[in-house]
Amino acid sequence: MTHVFALMLYVGGNLIEPPMYFYKIETCNYYARETVRRYGLSDNSKHFGTAYCVPKYIKLEEFKVY
Image (tube, rainbow, N blue to C red; front, side):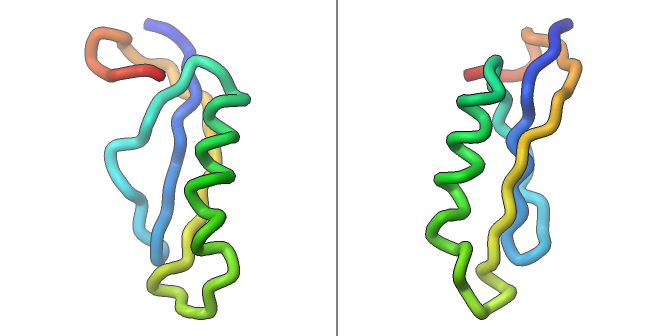
């Protein structure tokens, strides 16, 4: 088990599963920022995206970590 950062991505208010996991917060934040850049100014809430990183404690053998 180890601590990682999970990228939580919501599009149209729905969580996209499963989250991506990263060893470094800087990498996770980069993907969070770049993922929603395209949708950030949309007036249509169906396509509006939000992304952020949260710490998680996971089993490495069960998930791919970048």
